[in-house]
Image 1 (cartoon, rainbow, N blue to C red):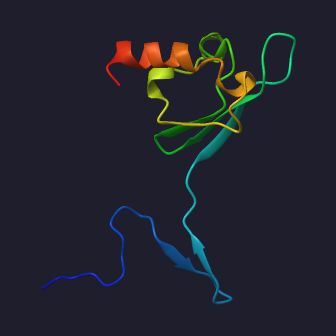
Image 2: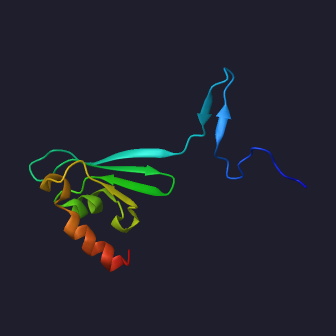
Image 3: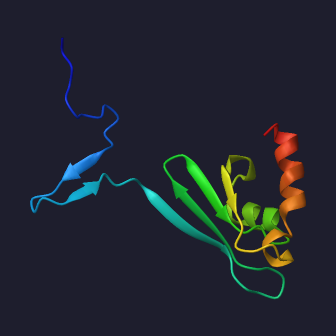
Length: 104
């Protein structure tokens, strides 16, 4: 009794367009450049979608970059690395200590 067919209560799912193609509902997403190649840092990006925060690369001084940009390190849910060089991983030891202190 009262079963809904094919409806997602959270508002997500697939939407059928007028031409018959299908499209996913959009989510608010943002891309923020935390750093670029400079004398003292390597590139790092922050991708935010819904409540998820994904960081690409954590160079040396990454926590300082987060403080400067107003990013809360404890709220980062995923960290992706483009390679295993110090340019991409230099900030990992500090991030691990912060995550441990925050109970993550």
